[in-house]
Image (cartoon, rainbow, N blue to C red; front, side, top):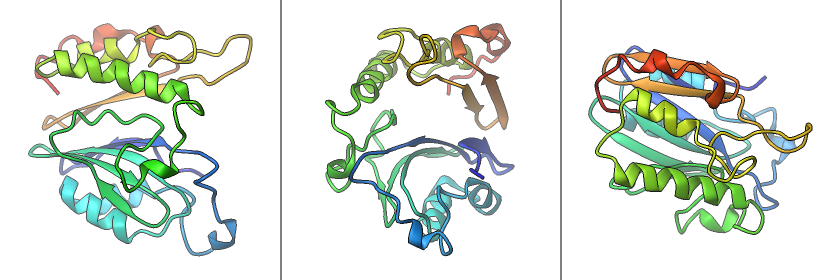
Amino acid sequence: MLWPGSGVNDSGVAMSTSGVWSERTNVDWRASATGWILINSHDLLRRARTAGEFAELLGAQRRLSGLNIALADPERRLALEATATGVTVRDEADHHVLTNHYECPATAPLAPGPDENSSSYHRARTAGRALAAARGLTPGALAELLADHDGYPQDSLCRHQIEGSGSETTYASIAVLPDLAFYVALGNPCACDRAVFAHQEGAI
């Protein structure tokens, strides 16, 4: 059973994950009795009072695979590139666009390259341009970005299967801090009622 891919706790620590899979990130199933298949996000959110504490706890949590993790609390934003054996913290000045590949020098050799997962790199560029052009995004504006179809159907932020083939976006989540508001849109973001985010005026 997999743990939630995103969430927020009562201290205002919000997190979201994206998987990183390639031939160089094989899972050693022999270690399944001693570590989680993915990170146990539920346990980490129950224990962490800050984004920095979440990162420290993650470093000590045994796991079989890696993920990209976006973290935030009311005071700080962090982006982590976690492998099965380590955690790399990205530059805090970065926009923290995390798709399905690593970018840090220590972890990038493990990631799928543009020839293996062109969608991940296209989605990172799309979101990066939008964040670079914005001075903070309201929840409504972020919901619109998550519904973006540049590169449709497989390279867009909102991914769609065609005739049952390819990957599909199955949910999107938005955390609003320090309000402790957490929104989840099930299914493709383009099909959700994005008006529910419009009443939120604060930028994320």
